[in-house]
Image 1: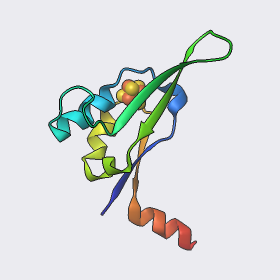
Image 2: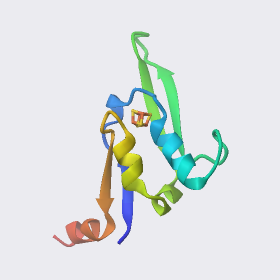
Image 3: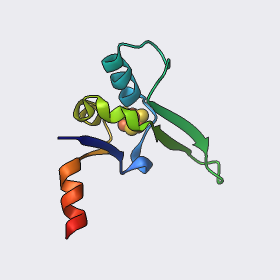
Image 4: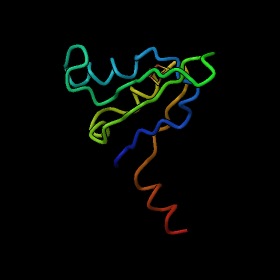
Amino acid sequence: MAKILKPTQTDKCNGCELCLLESQRQLKKVGLEEALIRIFKKKRDDNQKLEMQIEIDPRINMLHVEKISKICPKDVFEVENHEEIEGKNEE
Ligand code: SF4
């Protein structure tokens, strides 16, 4: 059963990069080498706060995405079950 990692609450992201580190750990990679998750910190127009942008390579779904989701301290991610998505489309 395919699991799909979705960042559903990116506004809560604090830029800690734990999700990125967990995905790299699963890939046995060091640093940002071939990272499947990238976190970009952008200044908002009002200059008050940093805004996070999360880019996810679809190949992330070959990994243990529930572990990646659970490591996030801000509950930014949801893991969707691929069959559930197909079921929703049929309704
Ligand atoms: S673990 Fe969560 S809070 Fe930390 S960078 Fe990833 S998405 Fe953002």
